[in-house]
Length: 228
Image (cartoon, rainbow, N blue to C red):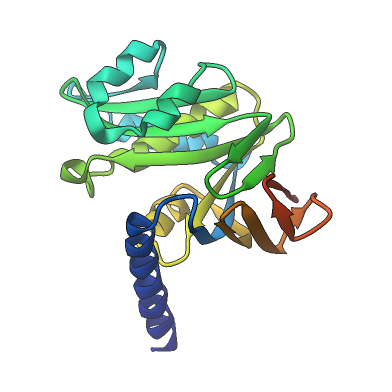
């Protein structure tokens, strides 16, 4: 009972926060409380490959975006800022198509990744990848397509000798939590970050550490790293 009560509170906070952020301009206020998760790729690559084979048929295609022009097929599904940052190297995008239509996209980064809107930067080791954005067309949810997309990414990262897929799940986003737990994600810690009028404030817990000297910064990102 207590667990359900906590989930209800978290879900309510998640919805209120999303509503506030839609109304307020990004420079006025942005904040995000979220948990950080790890998928140990070596432990889950075989299961991921099996899940891909279970879902893929003649109507489903999973692959990496190879050309910026392909994003035109996704319409309003993809954030234009992510398209501008795509380089098919340190910023890649995997897509799932259903009957030729792009219905889901997952974005990964290597080296480092900065969320400028939040004022937060992730330091990544050479064998780490950060899943910084993902989306599935609402009309195609609850069909296992996002799980297949994540599984495809995990299997591909295994082939590229990556060790860890790291990601964040916003507090209260139970659908995202279930999806990522389903591919073997384990919680490592949490972050609360807020930014207003150029001032950034960040607290970390668990295996998430802050590399920046202070929890408060002015017009520069706070850098964090994720321990093993």
